[in-house]
Amino acid sequence: MVSKRKVSFIFILVILLAISLAGCSGDSGNTSSAQPLAPASSLPDDVRAAPANVQEAYRFALANPTILEQIPCYCGCGSVGHKNNYQCYVAGSGADGKPIFDNHALG
Image (cartoon, rainbow, N blue to C red; front, side, top):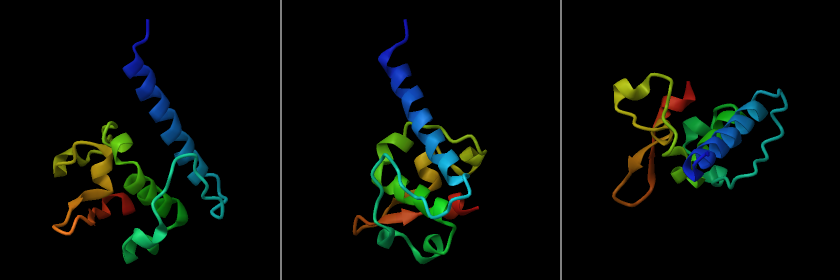
């Protein structure tokens, strides 16, 4: 029997895969997502200059940290101290509570 935790993990992976595939579809004007996104105005200038699908990924990360914190990163960034996928986008919070962005996911 499959545990609830395993089902939740699989569901999250399917959602993230769908978002990734939508970004690769070639229709850069279509940035809709089933999950909430943070406003584009919350992104730093270097992220706002990135392609639309990269901006959407950062907006998703800001609005859904608990989802990305459950997903390990497989790009090899563990060597720089990342413990989960969220840390590829957000390095932490400043004293003012605003996110400190990591530019790792830009390239």
